Amino acid sequence: MAAGPGRMWAVLDVEVQPQPLEGLVGVLNAEQADQLRAAATRAVAALDGRVVWNVNSTASGGGVAEMLRTLLGYAAGAGVPTRWLVLDGDPDFFRLTKRLHNAIHGAGADAVPGEEDRAGYERVLGRNLPDLLRLLGPGDLAILHDPQAAGLVGPLRAAGIPVVWRCHIGRDTPNPTSEAAWEFLRPYVEPADAFVFSRRQYAPAWVPADRLEVIPPSIDPLSAKNRAMTPEECVRTLVRAGLLGGDDRTASTGVGEAPPPLPGSRLVVQVSRWDRLKDMPGVILGFAGAPVADDVHLMLVGPDVSGVSDDPEGAEVLADCVRTWQDLRPALRRRVHLASVPMADVEENATIINAVQRHAAVVVQKSLEEGFGLTVAEAMWKARPVLASAVGGIQDQITDGADGVLIHDPRDLADYGRALGGLLADPVSAQRLGDAARRTVRSRFLGDRHLEQYVDLLAALVG
Image (tube, rainbow, N blue to C red; front, side):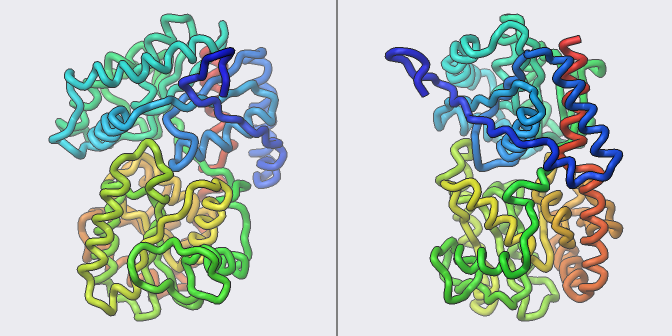
């Protein structure tokens, strides 16, 4: 990405592929469709040619990148000038911001960043800043995502650029660890023109109420990860990827020695990053004690850890899962599967995830903390029964017993096992929950609502 003769950009300018807004409109009811079209018209008029720049830490491998890819595509398709930049960070920077991520969730008390960490954090962002100042024009707006980009708020504001800081993570009840993390970030983000959180409870007390917006995330029903697939297409995709056994296997994504389950097996699936807060070892141990039949297999599906640049803990967590799997008795080891899905081809990765979620008998998300469960919304959209922890944003997605099942203490493995056994033993009730879940996502967690909330926010800023 040349920036002129003899010079390269530090930041990565990610290509935004415009997507026709009418595609999304076709999934909505008439009232939702009219509201989205009106919001698009309002956005073009209010922004009047200003470019909206989104800045984050990775172009793939996480929920933020997935949302940006689709939301910015729809915005561009509606005629809103929009660009996407990815920061250039080194391993030390991403280790630091991962510590911040964990601490904001209240975990990792022994590794909360302190004053001694500021120089390295500011050095990396200072290396990226000149490129941003050259790219962003007068009157443009910037949306900076999560702790990785927080240190750019002040310099961009000083350059006269309105800045929104968008935080996708948080904890409902502060503890000393989370408060220490916020004190590290506070001087960087406090000048922001607006703060966006997924839940009101996530915002620290010092965020001014008149600059706080609550915008839950969303999914794109037309993306490769969420588009409709027939059961036969799902099986073919999973066999080729090596997640199910069959004659057409062309790849192996499994970790460990267990052969893949056969297509007729019932699958319990958790899809997530290899992240300590997703408690994947706990998912294995709870399954091992659950009252489930011998035809039920557990599959933990995560990204190839070499393909997620901003998460240095992934390989360690995957290794913990392998050790937990190895400690199972042999009969159980044959029914527990760890899968690392390649990240090189974004569409292929998304199609595999789509297929495994649709093929699942039950989708689990047993997180210890969760800013917002995109994988929960994805599974709900696919009308799958979801068993998830009553933590963070998941509580806004699932109403216990109405459109899913919540575990009120995610560390209670016996309760998780009983709930899982109950869903598998009553497929009629499980499907009733799945059907209700799809209706919930259609009304509350698709891109139309998300885009409309951003239009209102940005229109207010430029106004």
